[in-house]
Every structure is written in structure tokens, then in C-alpha cells.
Image 1 (cartoon, one colour):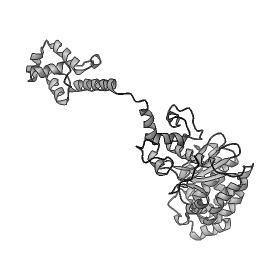
Image 2 (image 1 turned 120 degrees about the vertical axis):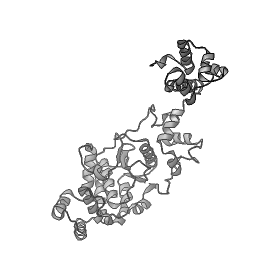
Image 3 (image 1 turned 90 degrees about the vertical axis):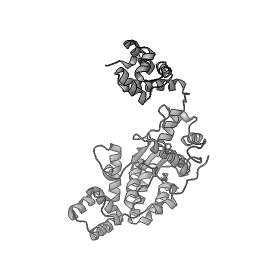
Image 4 (image 1 turned 90 degrees about the horizontal axis):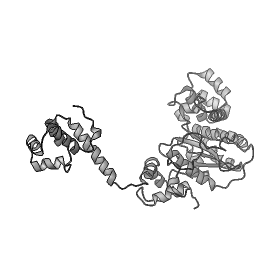
Length: 380
């Protein structure tokens, strides 16, 4: 028999209706169920909740599905719990903060001063970290008024990285940036492509041209490669994560961000670049125009496209070590940059690994660095 359960608030009301429908008394029901009349009275009066075993017994007595009794009991219990539960307006806030931000990692990295995620200092430290007056104003929360302008929909993890970068960059001292500073810096960087050790000069070259350059280790799952933005009209910032410790990746991402500065892309919004590896490093239709321009400039900087096209046309599909070394010498770049372009062009990222020299340990000693065990010193 189909029944509309919406008319009943509790299983006891359904049982009472069924008794009236059948013309039964509590005593009759006690006999049918083989139970004590006092126990039946507690069921009918709603003083005993209906569990699975009792629901099956009632099903046999009334020919009503046991699920109906259990559904009513569950709804009733939930309604009672909501009435008695103490409302905690901060619970949703905590769910966003602790569920979306990598709080444990931020503590480990020294970004917030707390013993662990249960430390009462975590929330006031997050307020300090995000530079707001109240916990409710932290950007990742749904109703926070302040939002960082980025070129893509940044995740909470990525936003945490961006805030760390911006804080460190704001305390750096560099000369005033002048027009064409990025272009001039790129010209000075070009000769450094010949050897991994030359990358140690990058921070100095960029600083001399008024560009704040820093390296901040990425957070788990952030997949960030770099960012370009402006603190003010004369203060461009380039930050790299160096999540891939390879010479080709370093120079490609650096030149990519430098092109953003040259074209002043990051003035109105942060140019956050994530997953520049693989297919996202190309010039596909789904990449916006600003990123397409930066990708093209980065690839041209590493190995001019016409020269790379000609090399591939002559040597494909076999690229011998002798050919790669000869071509890199002719282009006056490290073989790893040739290898990086070949990997991207062929889609074979398992090839030419031996040419991809590590470079992080060369660059970080001369750069403002936060990560890999080091915490960038900051003022209060």
C-alpha cells in the first residue's frame, strides 16, 4: 500500500494511524507483535525509536514496508538534532579554511606561526598571512569582498602561494623599473644560455633592471610554474616555483614571465602560469593571446623557431647525440635547451633526459628563495 509519508512527522504517528485504520488497540498490537503491552505503549507514544529489527516486525504486522518506518525515524531524529544543536556560524568558515588551504604545509614551511593545525594561533595567523582584519575576509571564503585579480581561476592552494610571493616581493629592494627594462634584461640573459653555471647571474641581471625576482617552492597540488605581476607602476615581479629542476624548464618559464613584463601584461591582473609543461606549453587554441605571445617569445629565446624547424626537417626522426651537440654549439646554447624543444615538438617527454641538467642549486644561492628548507626572512 502506497502512503504519503509527508503527512507524518514521526513513526509513532504512522503507527497510530495504522492502529485506527485497523481498529486495533495497543493490547491487540501487543498480542500481534508478541510484546509486552507497556513496551507497545512506548512505541505508540514515540518514546522508543524504531530500529531496523522493530521496523521489520511492524512490516509484518501492518504490511507496510520497513523502510517507511526507518525513513520517518531518520527524518524525525534529524529534525530533533537540528533543533537542539548549537549553531556555530564559524563552522562553515573553518570548513573552507582547513578543507581548502594547505594549512599543515603552510605551518611546515614557516608561513604561519603555529605548532600544528589544532593550535589556536592558526586562525589569527591566517588573518595575518592574508593581510585582512577578520577571518571572514580571507579571500578564499565565498563572501570575502577582496579578491586577487588573476588571469585564471586560481585555487585556494595557488592563492596561498601567490600571497607568499607578494609578501616577499613587497620587501625586496631593487632600482626603479624603466621602460624597455625587460627587453634589455632579456638581451643580457641570452648569452647565459650556454652553460648551467651561467644561470647564477640571473637574479643580478633582473635586479639591475628593476625587476623583483624570487623563487618560491610550489605547494603540493598547486602545479604553479611562475607568475608575473606589478606591485605598483614601477615594480614588476617575477616569481618561479622551479618545480621542475631542469635547465630547459627554467629558461622557458623565466623568459615566458619576462615577456609578460615586457608587454606589461601583469599590471591589471596577476599572470599566474600553471602547468606550462607538455601540451600547455604550446600555442593551442585554448591558450589566451597573452599566454600565446609569452610562449612564443620563450621558445624563440631558447632556440629560434626557424632554426629549430630546419634542424628537425633535416634530422627527423633520428636525432643523434652528435647532431644535438653540434646544433647546440652552433646556436651557442646548452644542449638541454635543444632537448627541451625536441621533447615538446615530438611529444616524447621520455627522450633526451641526459641533456636536461639540474639548475636549481645554481640559481637559488643568489636569489631570494623560499622553500626546500629555507624560509625567506620577512619583517612584521
